[in-house]
Image 1 (cartoon, rainbow, N blue to C red):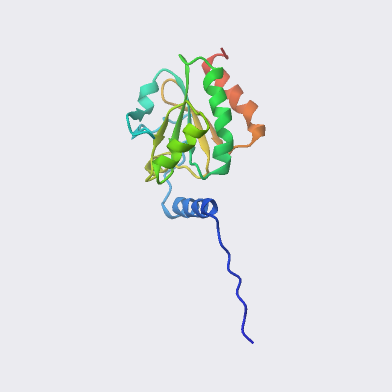
Image 2 (cartoon, rainbow, N blue to C red):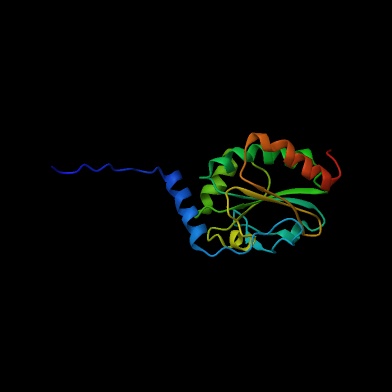
Amino acid sequence: MRGTSTRVQLNPIHLAAVLLGALLLAVPPAAAIGEGKPAPTFALPSLSGDETLSLSDFRGKVVYLDFWASWCAPCVSAMPFLEELRTEFPSSRFQVLAINLDKDPRKGEKFMRKYGVKYPSASDPKGRLPQSFGLQTMPTSYLIDGNGVVRYVHKGFRGGDVQAIRDEIAKLVGGRK
């Protein structure tokens, strides 16, 4: 009697998540950047490719640095909240900055246009910056003070996380608008 085999097919989103997970496990991670440590410096092209974005561009401001990809479901659900944060705190003291990890930057750019996201997003299709931060989970966000020091690290995203993130930002920014 012949054995039967079951063939499992992964949709492209699940396949991309599996591949990123394998990549993160295959590459020896740098030590994870934690609270009290300086954030790695970087200069990356924007998703549109028309400018270069750097953490140092926002020196003096509190920066919520978010690593995301269009295929990452928790990343996608966090975006409306991040857009709210962008308008909730004074732009003179606070900035949301995203790092898109899509292999094809056009996918990230299309996604941001579709959902009306206004904060800047850099493109890192080779995933080098996540290695510098020791990124282990998607999404992961870093709250960085005006001197470039990480003050809060948030791994993953759930709706119940919103108030804790707001409170951490308010502590550093000195209040909402």
